[in-house]
Image (cartoon, rainbow, N blue to C red):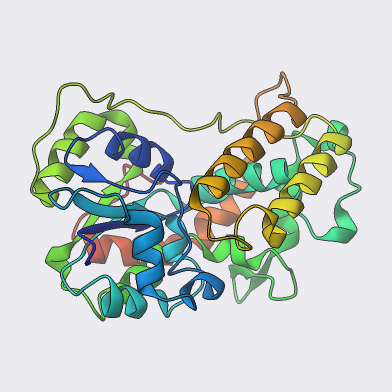
Length: 315
């Protein structure tokens, strides 16, 4: 079995909302769990493509379009495009959602802070109740250095992977080594949130299917302003996430239904653990200045890929 499409990127660019909308379409079949990790995780990939198909598409009607949504397909591992080409097929259509990388990093930071993963281990004892309004500023100052008049990522810091996730063009160009440009659709997040209907009309046309009136096209993901209200809640969230990531909820079983139940329970447990602060979280002007400078080259690279100016949409 070959896949018809994959929403392959990027994090904090609306892929959860896209997943929720595509899940409602009668002509589309995607796994019940977002972010299936077969292509993005060597432990699952080693089980073979037949295992992947049986586990996630075993009950899929033949006439439906088959796909998956996983921004991890555009993270770090540059071998993923080749794996998709060799297994899912050379005709698979690829969808990427991109966003102002400054805002994307900011959103990712808040999510990582919620998980207790925004700072190295030795910095987790920061008093978050006092630092909530300047936590991101601290993150930016410690993760960037100025060299020859421009800001670059601090190679000695462990958070560099978060920063590099906004280099969209690098990952898209890896896919272009295997797939023609007419099989790739790039969604601009800022246009998506302004008018989702226009985006989905174009996306469904790209996939060769019709829009459907029963679909709720205004699906939203979690509140992007959630951060831990205390160091205690951050560390408790971190504890639950650690249990999940060590494999108890995913890799030690071939029972898909069990995994699904446990993943959903994990999400509920996390929601009970984390409290939502009353204050809104804001990015400081100094942090924005540094990030605008750092991502300027990426903005130009994406403009070249898209053949359009992003100035009014990004910065």
